[in-house]
Image (cartoon, rainbow, N blue to C red; front, side, top):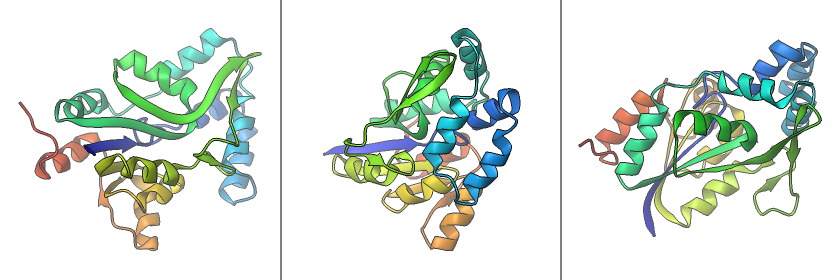
Length: 218
């Protein structure tokens, strides 16, 4: 088995703002009502995202510009390098779409990172999702079942660390060896009695991994 992997959610964890909020605020104000319906459990996560991403109605150049303006935790590119230099593999695990994640990764030079997410593509002025119900990580609610992904990685690695910030991340947190929780995820895991390390950013995650002996500086 390989030694260890670091798996991170993207929206709200690596990025400081969910891409769907950028779309809602800029192009789809009606999406705020849909957001509340989704949070109330009346709409599936994947249906909420499909509706938002298909309401942009801009050419691809404008969409890519918006994506490249997504604010991220500025320490993430260095953090990824430090994990890789310490013999760890890095994965981004997102219930959003790989379409915008790949653009961000290229912008910041994040290399040799595996993205596990819902496949997305640009067509007819919008972002569309291409989800395969036959895929072994398929989830009817999220598109991708993050818990199944972590369970699969646990068969390959001795230790799997995970970082997340919101409800979808509470499911994989059950299976990760260590979960670093930001924001709402802290309260959710506390209520579920799932252990976690409370963090605000990737500098704090890195400090924890240095103390645990996973990241070696120099």
